[in-house]
Length: 174
Picture 1 (cartoon, rainbow, N blue to C red):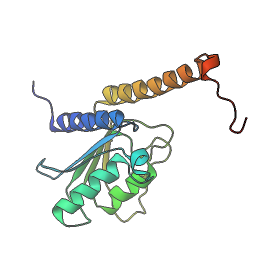
Picture 2 (tube, rainbow, N blue to C red; picture 1 turned 180 degrees about the horizontal axis):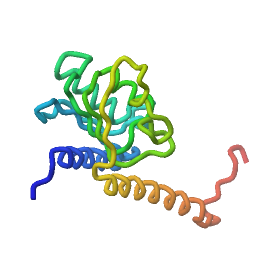
Picture 3 (tube, helix red, strand yellow; picture 1 turned 120 degrees about the vertical axis):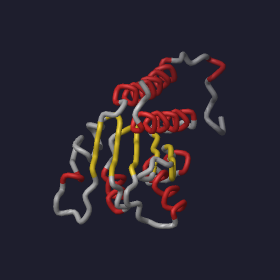
Picture 4 (cartoon, rainbow, N blue to C red; picture 1 turned 60 degrees about the horizontal axis):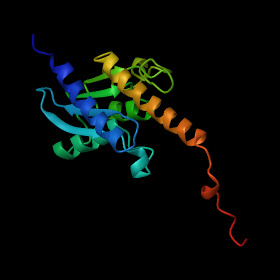
């Protein structure tokens, strides 16, 4: 049985997240498509490499999509992202007037679609976006867990590495 369009687009977001990981970033990927399923923009996390706290995958994908269509609004579009969006990203998605947001893994620490807060549920906002979570949630979560496990293990190896006498350098000037 063929995979649904949501699953296929989330798989593309997972591959973008993999690229972010290879670049030393937290592995989050995002894809924006129009109502017909055509990809308008893609993004991978790059806050570290770009020295930019706003360079989340969702923001990168929104910027690319908006540039492609020549408009800051994307009515009818859907954004797929591997991790539940934070408040900044969800705010940008609401301002872009997206029709849907589809995410993979929940984020209990910074998620703004029910994880910590639920921005799409705020009825007073002037635009409502449909949000669906849990598409390929296990795969998305496993990728993030593996990334952080690798980082923790690397940190332990650095701390646990024995200091050899030849590695010790006297302070400058001595």
